Length: 513
Image 1 (cartoon, rainbow, N blue to C red):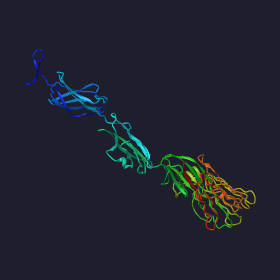
Image 2: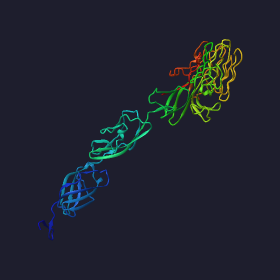
Image 3: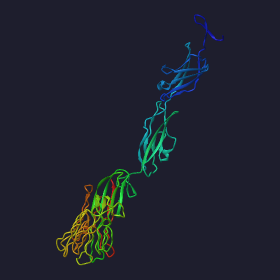
């Protein structure tokens, strides 16, 4: 028959030739990938009944779940990928016949699993657009110990954001591209070990650096000591992009002085407050910086919040704007959330840097006569003295009534304050206007009263108002502040001159703790 024969006890039968294996189409198995692995085995002498199996390096044998004889020279074997164990590679390929004859091709199959991510998918964290250095590190492991390379696949979002991914270490570093608001950079990271890859989705959030905004003007508040300020009169909002602790220094605007007076005269300085508070992102704070009291010759028609008088009272120094820290609601006079309109009943202010009273003359019968109260929260006038005996300054006012007039002048006492203006007299201090500090004694006085009391509600410490001795200057020069950061003329009282008695505006300065 041309074939080997043997006697089986009854008759002579053909003896199949031993199978031989020359190759296998796939020599790598990813045992962690799941599913089945299909192998195409090439050789000779394959026939019905042959069974394919695989031998580990410890002689452990795993048998194919199906063995299909395609031809005498090809077999297709299917087996679960999870059957292969990395520690038992390389695997031999074995074909066994019904006659127990076998064919083996040694050291053919290795287990090569894809790398496994150890970095969790999703958000890696948040960085600021001015951060530098290494921000995050991607990490994966490989069961075979192969070197892992890290790349971005499908896009170039990492480099597009100004960052770089180190292919060897997985480190993401660099100076991100500046952003105007919180920006999410999404990307797909790929870990490659040998010929196997594993992909995972990640994202990074890039934010602007913490900033404090006064109106629309932003100041970077990353470093301790960073400052932002408002030193011009008017309304403004304050917001922060992240919660932050700040020092606050607040000066009330000074009181105005007369013009063309016969003897030197000043308006009194505004008060000063300081402290440390926490500003919260998402909260809008409101500040109103008072305008320094105008000189006495002005004839203006505005509310006292901006330091200007409503009536033409020739040659009397005017009170400055409002002075208060804490919630200020209108009930005495109305203010609004608009820099040009102070008459909206729904307005609420958190920070109000206001005013001193108007100035006064040195001699009783000289022109002009005494100053006006200004400011808020209604303390009595600040420093004063009287050469002829004891005198009282103008009284402080409340939010709904004016202060009483001062007494002790050589002739008439001061009048009480009115809704929009302080009282006056030729020889004694006028009372404060609604929520205004009273003026100092006019007769032989060197100036008007201090600003309205700074009611800080425990949030800020109040330094109060300057006092003075005969010939002293403290009453018309505001304190320099706990950080010696006072703007040059903030809160100073006006000086009588032939051209101007304008006082210093209020001011608010924020300093990063």
